[in-house]
Image (tube, rainbow, N blue to C red):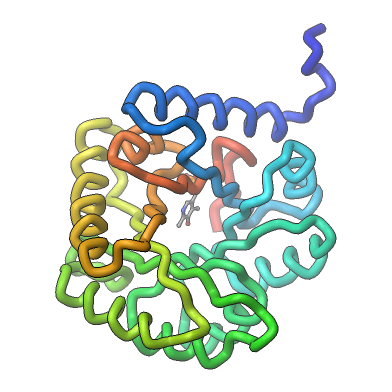
Amino acid sequence: MTQNAHMTQIQTAIAEVRLTILRAEEKYGRTANSVELLAVSKTKPIPMVQEAIKAGQLLFGENYVQEGVDKIAQLQQANCCWHFIGPLQSNKTKLVAENFDWMHTVSRTKIAQRLNEQRPEHLPPLQLCLQVNLDDEHSKSGITNINDLKAVADSIATLPNLKLRGLMSIPTHSNEFNTQRASFAKVREMFETLKSDYPELDTLSMGMSGDLDAAIAEGSTMIRVGTAIFGQRDKK
Ligand SMILES: *Cc1c(COP(=O)(O)O)cnc(C)c1O
């Protein structure tokens, strides 16, 4: 038996993902520990999240508002940082503004304005990423060009209860490293362009279980990993 025999599957999986991140940082000339791990716990029950917390995991991503709000309420003692990463209808912004620390999928000024108005006074500003979509211009989710991106960023800069941190992207699925990398490179270029106006931006939220190496190669600072930590999800 190894000394890790007592570790649960989730704890082992987190250790493995952290090692994968470290190796990719080394391979692509990134500073060690410059890429944060967001554990995507959507559809997974609270005991599984608690196992991850035992492994020292503190950043969690949720896609469904009510499910996320329930977990946040039940895990209040744990000092976790909760990121909303799913699509958001404008009638659900209040729950995100009142409960989450970060929001990754803003692509319209109207949603940002609602989040700003609904963010409670006693909380720090909601940390924000703008979602970009550079692979599929016909898709509804995500900003597709630099002019729109700058316009939304400029209006967020006037909103005191929001703090823009960077960009988020979910590229079109591919199993091929070079294709994945080319998609992430486009996001990185747009990030660099936006940073010439907003040099304080520090977050590039990109990379999931199947493409995190390519994302780290292209400058990701936060990968969002579900399956590789918690296992397959049941199909909805
Ligand atoms: C589900 C989801 C993830 C995690 O995907 P895995 O392939 O399970 O790692 C990451 N980001 C977003 C936006 C998601 O919806």
